[in-house]
Amino acid sequence: MDDDDEASVATERELGLPMERLTLFLDRFIVSLSFLSLLTTAIARGGDPSQHPLPGVADAGDSILTRQLFEEKEPVITDEMAGGYMSNSELEEAMKEFSKRCANISRMYSIGKSVKGFPLWVMEISDKAGEEEPEPAFKFIGNVHGDEPVGRELLMLLANWLCDNYMKDPLATLIIKNIHLHILPTMNPDGFALRRRGNANNVDLNRNFPDKFFPMNDIMQTRQPETRAIMTWVKEGHFTASASLHGGALVANYPWDGSEWIRKQYNACPDDRTFRYMARVYSNSHYNMSLSKEFEGGITNGALWYPIYGGMQDWNYIHGGCFELTLEISDNKWPPANELPVLWEYNRKSMINLVASVVKTGIHGRVFSKDGHPLPASVMIKGINSMVNASSILGDYHRMLAPGAGKSYQVSVSLPGFQQKTTQILMQDSSASLDFILEPEDSSKIRRIPRILGCRCDGTDKLELVQYLRGIQLEIYIVVSICLFLFILFKRKWFLKLVNQRHIVTPKRSIV
Ligand SMILES: *[C@@H]1O[C@H](CO)[C@@H](O)[C@H](O)[C@H]1NC(C)=O
Ligand SMILES: [Zn+2]
Image 1 (cartoon, rainbow, N blue to C red):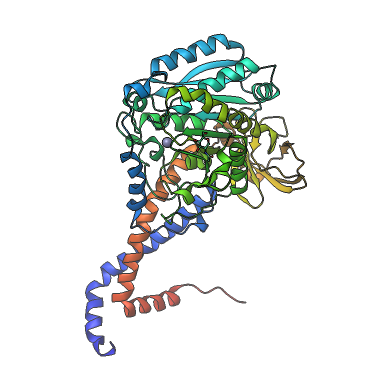
Image 2: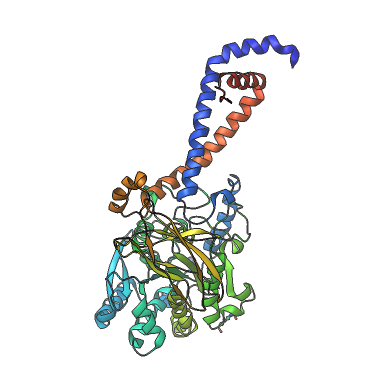
């Protein structure tokens, strides 16, 4: 290489200007990328971005294809098989009847419409349905996949059971008095009517959410109306925990569903211990889920079973602070309707115990300013890299945690404009109560407070932007890496010279 000095110099002269531009361009890019990473780290909820290096780009299709094979094996649902299940309009009628019969403990509302315009009806069950209370909210979603209709039937039975047993059964009473339970029996009425997995556009709704690990479903316009409805609902709802009901297996599945490795491997989320506890509550209360030969204890980490991307479960945890399980409640996706009463008996205790677990465990409380305003502060536990937010209306927060008498947690509460507060709490066997009063930050930063108090402060818009930026970040990283590599490879010497020049140009700090 040394012999080629002259040629090199000539080339350098020729390319001098563009190269300089390129360097400047790259510098700016790298600076802005570092900034983006900081932003991401600061705002993203759940998961530590630094623990997740950039995923490989190839092979992403493989396991996604594997999942689609499930679809191809699906049997055709005959009219005879569909007999005994409620049609969409019969379900709607049953819900209306329920809210008339149980008006004292419920209300009915719609969160949007399916592609074909069918309302996505929800029943809220609570002694103060529709009112704000400093209580946790739980949601159940059935029939995400059109050809998995058991959930929608069981959810209707659950609502009626709670209504019938209010003030008679201690758990029914506890749920109605202390929790706001929201039930969406069918998320995919069009798919149900068509007796197939996808919605009316044949999109699998449980692959249609923005993904944590790969930039997908990030464009609002291509999102299905059913998915959009759920996303808005979650962002406004302040849910503590939830579960969606599926069929085709018997197991309680918990996050992460996805992984950057694209192969089957346990991918623990920051709240792994709590999620395993919640999944256990379901499987242990079930008739025989915990006896599974395929899944130890009848529970599984999603990515270990088989990774999926764009799922609803991970999205809820990351963007809603909502601890969601995916429950597979019958090996047969579409069993004969005469099996429904038995399936209800198998799942009844599980469903009730899971809902009740949001008040029986965890840390609950409210956050106020010194002058008594509720604050939408963020609550974090030392050693667990995830966050739940207090509600902006009442300042109440509900932090799910696996129970453990004698276990001690360090709880930090923070909100821009206020001093962070940290305290240690020793857990008993049940849930704990912990309120906070935050002091304003020193006066130099105080001017930020009014703006922050004026907004809803859930960081929703920021999250969307960051997510979008994270999406393009991967592509930018790859392009920049390739450019840098080629640049250094071809212009090594020129590069070194440039670096030396910089050393000279950079003003030295005085060391007087
Ligand atoms: C649970 O019980 C059902 C109905 O008896 C049976 O079909 C299924 O194989 C059982 N599953 C396990 C894991 O024991
Ligand atoms: Zn399903």
